[in-house]
Amino acid sequence: MKAGISSYSLNQAIQSGEMTIIDVVDYVADVGADHIEIVPIGFNLLENPNLIDEIANRAKARGLEISNYAVGANFIQKTIEEYETEIETVKKHVEVASRLGATRMRHDVASRKLDETSLAFFEEDLPLLVAACQEIADYASQYNIITSVENHGFYVQASERVQRLVRLVNRENFKTTLDIGNFLCVDEDPLVGVENNLSYASMVHFKDFYYRKSEDLPIKEGWLRTPSGRYLRGAIVGQGDIAISEIVTFIQEKGYDGYVSIEFEGMEDCRIGAKFGLDAMKQLWKEQVK
Image (cartoon, helix red, strand yellow):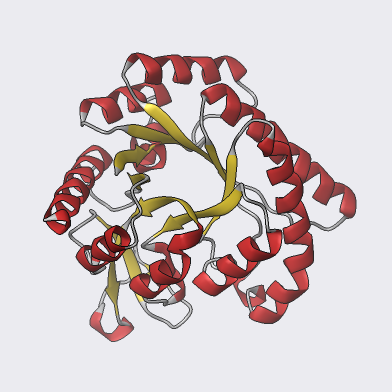
C-alpha cells in the first residue's frame, strides 16, 4: 500500500492563505506520506503553467510521487458547443497531469440540482457522459494516464451508478477513484459501496464522517444533509462512524495494494486532521495484515 494525502485535505489552510500548494507538498512529505494528490482548489494550473513544474520539482526533491490530479467538470451543458468546450478543457488538464508526472487523473462528469438527481435524469444523461469519458480516456492513453470518476456530487455517487458508467465507457484506462466515505452522502453503506466498486478502482480515498439521525442532532449547522434526511460531518479518519477497519480488511483480502490517500474535510485544524488520519490509516493497515 502506498499511503498519501490529497492536497484537498489542506484546503482550509490554502484558502486562508496560510499555505501555498508548495507548502502543502512539503507538509505531506514531512508527515511521512509516500505520495500526494494534487487538487487545484485555491490555485489554477491552466492559468499558471509555471506552477506545474514547481510542484513536480518540489515533489521529486522531497521523494514524493504525484499519484493523481483531480479536477472538476460537468458535461451536462445547455448546448453541444458548451459540452464540447468542457471536454476540450478536461483534455488540457490531461496535459497538466502529464507534466506533473501523474499516472492518474480524476475528472468529474456531471452535476445537477438536487431535485434533478433521480435515476430517470441519470439514464437520460448517461449517453453524453459515456461519450465524453471515452473521448478523454482515449486522449489520455497517449500519456499513459488512467482517467477516473469519483463517487461524489450526489448525482454520480451511488456505487451502482459509478459502476454503470465505468462499464459503459469500457476503456482499460477509465476507472473510479473510490472514496470509501462518500457513499454515505447518498445513504449507501460504505462497505457495500467498496465491495461493489473496488475491482474498478484506480486508487482509494480514505475519508471518515460522523453520521447522525436528524432527531439526534439538536444543532445542524456545519452538517451536510443526505437525501434521506440524515446528517454528515467530516471526521478525522479512524475517529468517525465509518467501519474503516472492516473496509481495510476487505480491501486487503481482495489483494488491493495500490495508492491509498487521506481526504480530510473536518472542523479540526487541517494539518492535524490530515496527519492523524494518515497515521491511523497506516496503523489500521498494519493491524489487518497481522
